[in-house]
Image (cartoon, rainbow, N blue to C red):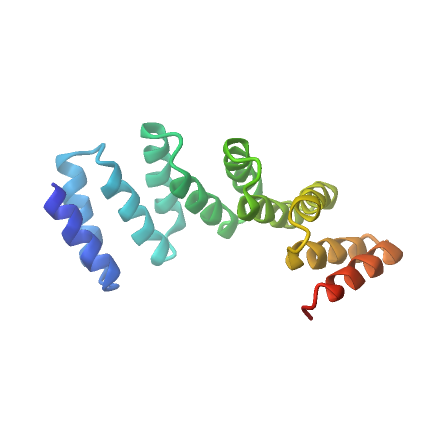
Amino acid sequence: VQAMHTLGAVYMWEEEYEKSLAVFNQALKIKPDFRHALYRRAVTYASLFRYKETIADLDKLLKLQPKYDGARKLRAKCQSSLGNFPAAIADYTALIADDPMGEEERLQRARQYVKAKLPLKAIEDYSFMIKHFPDEYESFTERADIYFSLARYREASSIRQHARNLGRH
């Protein structure tokens, strides 16, 4: 089964996705709880934009190994791609619970809040980012965009100015 996993991974890296899926499917028939094959098959499905199948594999994997951060991140991205922002937010929230200073996870959750039309929740995450990562340019500009959308122009202009002062335009 390990050799099949390796072969499937080689096919995946060579972008031979259908061959990769065939090998991972065969490996998972032999050993249904083979976590590495489940994850690689999920990555392969994601590479083919087959997000529902990706999520199904990641759901199985996360039942076997709940703290698999890579699986949770990929599932969040797929949920977002399908427009299921609450599920993406839940995954990013779980990741943040494990690592409260997780910069990328908090930034992605803020973006999901924006997509879910929850601007005040997004502002909370961006504010956290600005406090703890004061050189994080995207946090400033994206927070300013939210303030503009809420017609809070003075605050938006002040935040934009600060972003410009960071030296990035």
